[in-house]
Length: 111
Image (cartoon, rainbow, N blue to C red):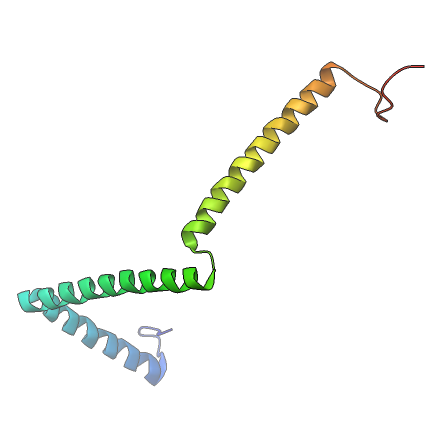
């Protein structure tokens, strides 16, 4: 980490100077319409490349029999529904036991 003005040493000064130069260069590129266009093209290419990579990854994983992200998300939703239903059933069971107490040992009742 560079220490500004505290005598951060040579490395700190180099980082500070380098950062200033990079910021100045980036500012010039972004202020020029051609630079803006080039950045926009680069971002578009990166986004298309990422989408393409995801498609290829999905196909490879499908061919290998490995579930993808969507499969995991679907399973997580199903598990959440099952947990919620189990909790609801447990609450109903608990309420039912409170209303009609039985032999805690489960003996079924009578002599």
